[in-house]
Length: 489
Image (cartoon, rainbow, N blue to C red):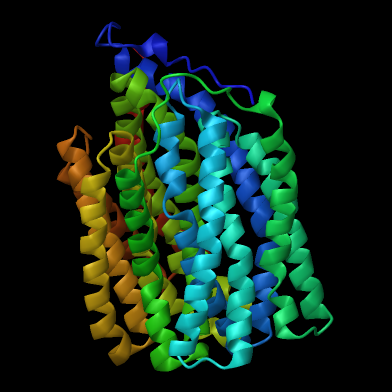
């Protein structure tokens, strides 16, 4: 694979201090936009038919939708044990100039496929302890069997991102997702048994590895081994694995407890709006921050730390604005969106959608801060924050979910993500990130003004006009922050 040679040397530390910010930002815009374009195509292309499949599942009934939602949530246990944080751990390691990329990757894949079998055995034992029937357990295991290898494939995609080849990832992920989704849609339309429908992830994983296998055999596609390579350290790998497991648990624990206490129907009602919120968060946090910016950050930390900080200072304000602007349409039009996509059965879930909306902005800021800290080698501090977030989430779920059901699950995940964002952004600020409380005050004032204008205009104007007028105050922070950041000298 060809490498992308960064032009960031033009914004090196010897540059005039007055021109540094403008040059540093402009240098990053072209590679970021190009790579993000490929990742958006991969995300939307792979999610297009997957979304259709999930909609058909939801329309088949909340109970069936809740069953497959639970299967995906439990499958994430297998995916996280298999991934074990390897994709985040490999990015800084593979970014080193003398890294034996092919050797590191093959060694990682061998470990991960052993973890797939171990995690499937643990999942079967967990289903037995929870008292699931044989049919329900079979569906859980089939979905998880596909999600495990897909998680292992992220190690290969991490190498693609480090080398600036997000286009390779797009060309593999999109056909594979189409194949898996078409399999699931066909099974639903033909009224196939649920275990057959559950093979959709297994079909996707098969196509992914059929595409990856030839690339792993082609030595010209990866860097040849070099002397002086720094090999992975087991202690660091375990820390990254702990971060990944904590992230999984605090994201999914409320779903597990909601299914246990209220059943699959309540879980289906909760998950319909969560698909919208999580889908938007994954698009930015996953496609842009983790898969585009993180590899670029890791490379810049070793080459030009002044440019590294300029990139983060520019990004944090942009992501705060993006979170506010993207959450407003879901707040005002959530009931119509849920009715259009999932049907009138989920119309009452609009309130749950609004309770989940703080997760969007919190996820954007949290993921940027985490990628910054991991690029700087501060994974131990990040792990401590994740442990604290998991402890808070356990407490919130234990108090809120049994008492309030789906509402409690929504407030538990929003509170946890807000706490995580505060902690990680605070750590990043101590390491040089320029993000002040005044920025949050301006953002909060813009949100309150938007809601106030919308609420005031709603009785006098058509709904669409009131929503449009309410959107205008959210543009005020952009007018205040972006011109100084983009100004050239």
